[in-house]
Length: 230
Image 1 (cartoon, rainbow, N blue to C red):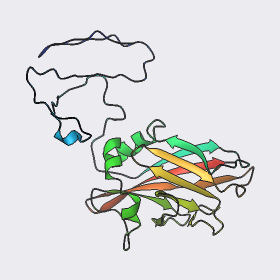
Image 2: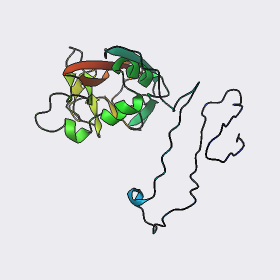
Image 3: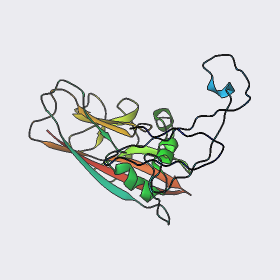
């Protein structure tokens, strides 16, 4: 569905939103009377920029949540998925933490918008560097909560992620680990999978990917308990 196009330096725009609308897009196009010509290239930093300030009422940018007042807190979330033990694929399922509502819970606990959490999440190279013990102030690190409550940052899968032992302990490829997870912070994508032939039909494996946020030297945890049902 498309609304009527409007033009002008100022004014009001209205649009009746159809029932069951999932996403709403508001497009603003600049139309200056004079502008500087730029030769075509793939570098957007040398292009003309015309920023706009917009305010929303009754809705917000996709993914944004209402952040409650107060200090950051810990939070827990739970996900579960049914998987095929006889699958020959390594990745078996990808959760979108934004669509699943998990990021909204974490955002309210950390007092940050989901996009801010994504932007503050450390990449794999930083976490895997020698001497890393946890995120610096204002940063988020993704780890794995072991059964004994400790948090591991010893990534062993691709990028941000772990190969994990049957009991949920962080491990490494080739040491008997059967399952794994990988996380794409920018896409809020949590992928879980197995080593083909290693997972057992009828068994549920529980893993705990964890986001750790440092605010003023105090660490706050978002533990995502994932139940992988084969």
